[in-house]
Length: 386
Length: 154
Ligand SMILES: Cc1cc2nc3c(=O)[nH]c(=O)nc-3n(C[C@H](O)[C@H](O)[C@H](O)COP(=O)(O)O)c2cc1C
Ligand code: SF4
Image (cartoon, rainbow over all chains, first blue to last red; front, side):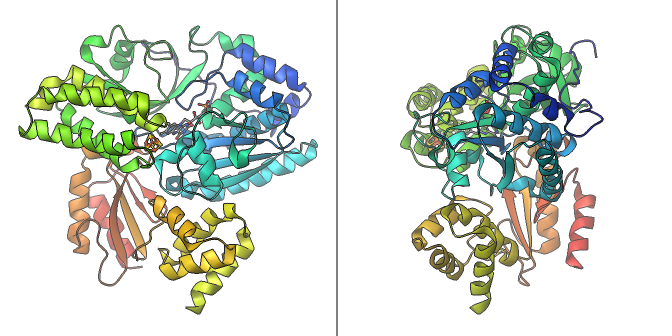
């Protein structure tokens, strides 16, 4: 691979000895762990990209005696399948990361929230959890991990909806603030991180912040696990260095006829061919939780957008009006324009509506519909009309 | 229905009777009965000492917590864009053909229910479907026929 740099941090061999990195890390002070995390510049891998070290620090500072660690394994973003691979191949790294976080912030219980679609992973994960608990006992670590299952709701990947779901309620996002670091699951200070984020934490403990920082760019430190699908001869999971352009990515993974790449799933951005060269994949350009969907020129971008809007309309929790009604209207709107029932100028009204949702919707779902909507409509207007 | 009472009691003994036990109990009922009936909801509410409306509200929020009777084998075909691009439609038509039902329906013998679902996380090997909790990736008409035939004989 000439265009992209492969990395082997996440899936690389753990250690010969079970839970060795975790055992070593237990010798560090909580301050050392958090400082190392902050220095590494690691940003969350679940999409939003908040600095992980800061999240840990804020939660550690809370005076409340009961705190929790939550691992977000809900992986519902269309086009993402990397957390499943991580949980299958290196579950020990994930549990180690949760335990390191638990020690650093002073939590005794961790929850892994796994999407119902992945329930076939449960037997293996439970067996691995038994092994983890044996080792934790061996070095006197008071941190237990429990598995909680979702039941087919994309919105439960949103952190506060996920907490509601663990608490046995409808997965409806909460108002923010308060943020999870102050009031998370069961109203207690909580660190919630993506599966891949926890694995990165372990690798930072192993190699140190300085080594970790050598990979990637100033804004996007480390590697990223990409889930690559669509019109590509090389669909699959790849761990790559952040900071490449879409052009380099397409050169490596496209089928020679790529017309657009959807970066970050249905809630991400569509990059058309003419912008491949100038768009960087990472926090300084188009961020991604890992989903990369490639479309060649035989594909109708109207169908792509229709599919995403179907998804949002179905998965909106319905709690707030801008999102509940907005998603429906956007979907109906593009159908009406396509059928000729509305003039093409109606698209401008729909664009305005999506911008409105960005400001007024209660959570990230409704707020991010505009990402794919405007990037597809703006760049492929003719396909929306004819 | 004494069996449902027994089932719910057993699940509550296992997972506890706090509000947070509601999800595992509902999931346990679906695993056993393929859906959560009104009677089951009332029974859960009684067991956890919460309003039936709370149980209903939670159950109906989640697409995998079916509140309508489902077949013994629930087939969920992924309808997200990549599976769509790689032949989801032909796979669905084949299943409809084999089971003689339309999307959303259950066979007369209550053995199969056919549904669609959002991204199952197998986009690199689409189209994919779940049969209960087992994923079947890289489907085409032949492969899906084989799989359905096998379930038919179960
Ligand atoms: C609608 C919606 C769905 C989300 N789904 C996921 C998900 O499946 N997995 C995930 O890790 N984060 C998801 N997130 C982001 C979480 O809310 C949260 O930011 C993340 O788990 C934090 O972890 P990180 O800092 O390690 O990225 C979602 C956010 C929204 C708004
Ligand atoms: S934006 Fe959508 S998903 Fe989020 S709270 Fe509002 S209705 Fe629910």
